[in-house]
Length: 360
Figure 1 (cartoon, rainbow, N blue to C red):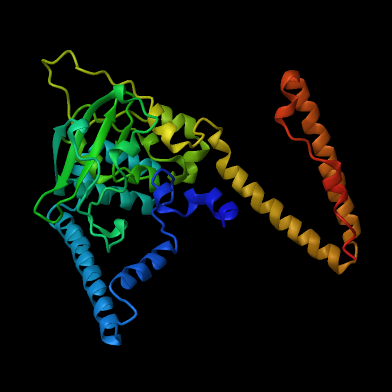
Figure 2 (cartoon, rainbow, N blue to C red):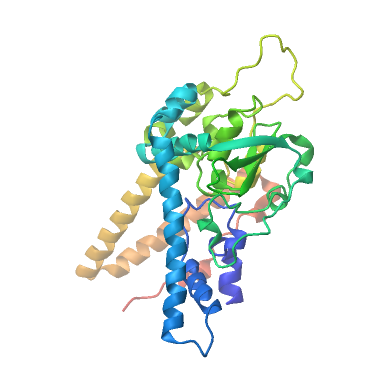
């Protein structure tokens, strides 16, 4: 268990997941948590009526959560159906260009939700970094506006001296009493305790609310991970990103020539948290995906043909020769590039090739 599961804890354990992209998908651990919630209400002397009462109570809580979600959607779709194009027109044109329809609708929904919040400029040092009144018998993902991490955890390994503003965002109308904190850095990075920018890749409603308050909050399409872009954008990614502007929702006053903080939009802080290898040659993402599909399907056909014609020994030998030749080629290229760092490449061992035995 320790060897197999603990090493991959960021893939399944909620405590280690807030800083990993997961598209909002939850694992089956929530099912186990649901069983735990019911067990807390029962003991070895409980009757079937007690079990039914515990399940009904949980069911009623989930119904209330669904009603709150419906209210959120209702208030932001009637009367002002095109908030993103009305209040963030420049930004809306950019996201329409870069994002496919499903991701675009999700991002526009976050923008519309921003108008159900209000914000207050604050100092994060004086704020309670963790909610102490979270309901113990609820999933943290299902509590409306519940912060998914503490600000202290969010700022680990971040240079807090580069923070220019901190905002406390809460919902208006009494739908929720939970607050989220949004931190703005001088490199254009923003972090929110809802961590949706990191886990889902979309800019959260809390940041859009801050944009309506502060000209220090800036948007560039590169905040959204490139994995969510349209395929045609990925092909010409460098050119598209270079042409895309850095945008704000609030214009600077004409009589204000100086700013208390200057934002140099590099997003280094966000890249550090995402650990996304953003500087890799992302133009090869789509072609590499296609090449893998072609190579894998061809390999399957070759195996089927080899088995049908009883020539699988020949195919195995061809693959062994191919592996050996590519190993030698890669080793020579690496030696030419850096003679002092040969040990960085682990050579393909001959004994592993020899382990491929006769399938008969």
